Length: 460
Image (cartoon, rainbow, N blue to C red):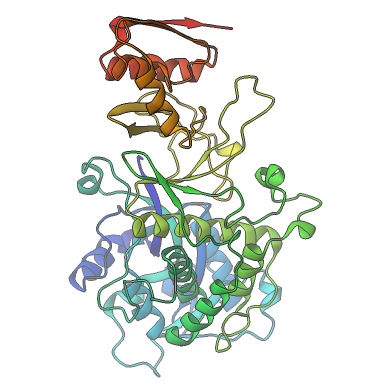
């Protein structure tokens, strides 16, 4: 499907999808950057909606249960099985939806096993003038949707969720917050709009206080941006759900997971249970497995918001060099947007994803231009140090015109390229054994138009 991004959606029945889309478009509440798609099994359902008067016939099927809880569970099952349509909407649409409904308080909510899904009643008489499209909404939540055709043709650049201009929330970071802190606050606010019925200004203030209390290791004040296409790099430990990073890929079911909770995990847990908001209806302690699924969705939204604020097209998590690889392979992983060919089994929105493909135009391919030298490589497979930029420039000045140079550990051309481009060496022999670095080296020699004065030797 191409580039995907997590966005707020309304779930409607297939026959009603076109009607709802037309109505939302008229009210300027449809997020046209995304396409409507069938619901998915990894969707995060926040609220289920029902009519004031429940009857078997209102869905046209006698098998649909009439009980609030079982009907909500039936709706969730429909979403997980792809039987409903996800309609991408703006945050303003979410606000109107919740302002036109009321929460139904169940005496025994745990018996429904709805994993903290809020059940709401549509078109309650206590709310005046509800929007016309609300009668068709079965549920609301967060889901990954593909870009529309018009957006996808714009250099294939990913987009981040938007906040309606009519929203009360500001679009600029508070002077007391860093851009990174602001992105996290906005993410928590968006998530809470789906899960709690409360005063936004109040819980925004609470979230700002909570985010400011996070350590710099968990929520850095600044993030590094690398590459000509602006890739945002999240530090190894920032916004981590588990202390032991090497176990994070199997975070669900880990025996030491409870012991490995981080302050970021605890922040999300408090947000989900309503502890961060004194006006919210308490939702109870969440089921661990279901919570992690929701937390992954919150992280996906956070990566998109960070990309938007920093004007970046990609977000990656910094990883350690793998000492067992033998070729010092990079541990960087892509967080957003999720590569369509990623090794899903070996990744999640917490640790990032490893694309299956490599080479030019692959999801991990990046170009860094230093001193007019273009250096391209796959950041998920090849290490790159920005700290030796001065040394690379100095090396280029040391090489004399007409000299022959032997580069024993060429990598992607860190010193080979300066010797040829700035030193104007007559010929450079470059040796390298990492196959991914070799691919990048050959690419860079051609791109910098110096391949005719070099030879690449593969192996030790």
